[in-house]
Image 1: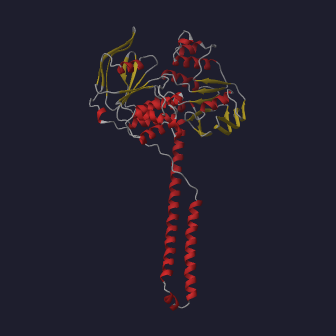
Image 2 (image 1 turned 90 degrees about the vertical axis):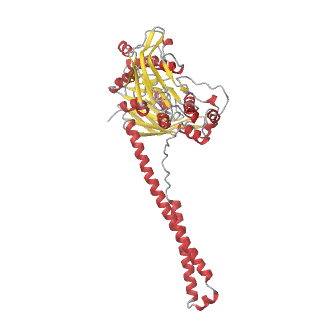
Image 3 (image 1 turned 135 degrees about the vertical axis):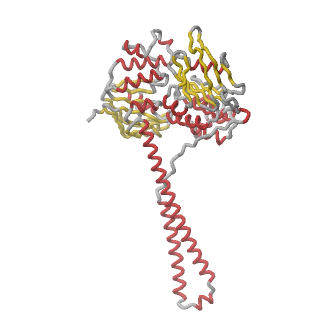
Length: 487
């Protein structure tokens, strides 16, 4: 039997009177490979910090029986011994840490993590700033890792490659599923189908009983009407008058009793709600924004430099109308520089004069005005309030979230709001630079549905393999100063 490395019992944790986590029992075993998923703010990172001993619950116990290392996406790397081979593998520059980019900081922290063996690893969003080479290294290092792994990640490809259990954090509860992320999705879909069948059976039985009760009541009403219509003289003319009246009265009451019994059975039925269906949202553009060029963005032998460094040489491309074009490649090859060159209508480009760019860039969004989330959206969109609410709901803005002041939003909420405003905004070409960073898997899936329903053209920079496979019509890779069409 596998050794228990972490054991959680009767745990409760609240923030500002809101119950964040309530866990009767949960355990991490010696060779577990667990992926934690859930919406932003559900408590994934909090659960990891509890297991690392950085937080302490109000109630319950967390027992650790093994040595665990903890990786936090937000912390800066500290000075520590690092395996030289790993420094080389990860192309970590020999310079002051203060000069590192976000990707370089992440690679250094991973090199530090893997330089010493630990019986267990608690890792929080390690691939946020990594390119595909960095993600490949991370997967290879952990594929043959001999110990317990608990991983919070929004990268579905990474979860599919590395984990054999999923912990879903929702409404303070943790539900365990066997298998990787794809297995988890399949199990959730099966649950949804079962719930749909149970809902249909419930509605069928409810309608049958209500219809039968209605027919019984109609029958009782007919008996009542028949008794009323029977004149006193007719009643006197009938033999066994007393018996007939009593018989009809009894018949009427028994029919009513049967109807009420059926209504009670309806009330006693265990209600089964229909599963929530995520509807595809269509974003129709106004005539004024309609583009007619078959290729609204083109380049002919474009050379792109930063200082003396050549990023692209003699690049020619035609980005087609109404398609989603993904641009990928290693960190530093020039993806964001190419995007900026396009946004600035740089040399070597032919861009339709009717193009209106909407842009999402990797940055901390600051809002200047004091206004609610809904007011912010209405100011930037010609869509009706119902459509705006649907989009915001898909991006996890519900209830009182719509009344929040935009200046009080967290970083993750700000990103979700900006992305929502782009799809509802007055644009016909969207330029999205790493839009899935800092989104949970559910918001990434909502973003995929947005892209499916969007009628405009999209230029997309991303390292998220699952996301690209799901949304891109064309995939370009920048390699060796060339822009190569891969599919």
